[in-house]
Length: 457
Image (tube, rainbow, N blue to C red; front, side):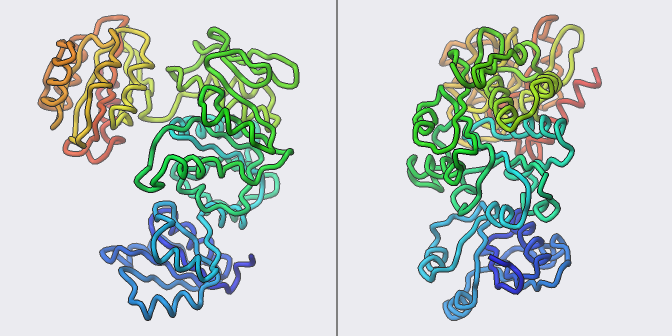
């Protein structure tokens, strides 16, 4: 579809909607940005959308009166959905019934851009894998863009891409719901566990959205899948694309796997040791899987093993996700402030390979903490609790037989207690299993404070 002079509705503001508007305006479209939230500031939205190109922009906020809605729908050539807007809203169904093409922001960027796409989805590990693959590809070619759910909309760079660009894209299930022609040269599904069921309603619909990542791939393309995930393993048997599995549990004839501590790539009958897990700076089996997925995708694209190996050894991980901060007086400090719920924080504990002093607690999201406490598994020597949830967590821990609990009134006090209890050979881990609100604006601010305190030691 040629965009110039077409009337396009961008549904939903926010970072994706604003980037989509900018692209459409540069392409000369007549753009209507619609958001159902009438409390948004029109001037603030306008200030974030650069004026460029020959297009025009109209902003509509709040509920549309029936007459105005009917009038608008009659004139539309295309609708571009922001990822945060559900695709089963009555107004969206009405658009569908009228035969108006409905694209996601990813489809728009793909249609407008050039180059080849390496796309990653999965319930967990997307950001780490995308960041690592992005680094590998940047070390291979400077003409690399890292985009998508990682915070940099694909639409914000699509018009800068060239035929030899490589686009590394993190894709959410929301973004994958609305693709039409999007076809990655290499795709990956890292794992699938229940998530976002309030949006997708059923596990089947959630899985189908994830699997859309490979729906347009052909025999010339590759899909990287987790052999240890029953859903992705079975999905691999249905694909046109070449399938490359990764496994942390078994040796594969073709694919990439852990053999003891070695990461081994087996491709076209040739086995190559890439590195050992001890040479990685990212901890835990889940991160070893992320590293294997990124390596497999790069290898499938044709990146030399030397570049993959060098990047894997250098990669420091994603900020605030089991991030190594420093070693001070024989104690290592890890920032896992992104562990904002018990499930995420369990990964932080599982990654520790030494006695650990743990900071937990924060804002109360009505979570249950039993599984998290049970995951301590003899590793946690002291639990230092803060925030609104500290009493609730302490009661759960006592009930489950964990008694090494210390209360702190402030974040700084909690940190001081950790320094006091940690001995050479121990780890101090910030992985609170709770949101940061109440003490901090967000988990990033909490993680930054932790790092600041560590670096002052």
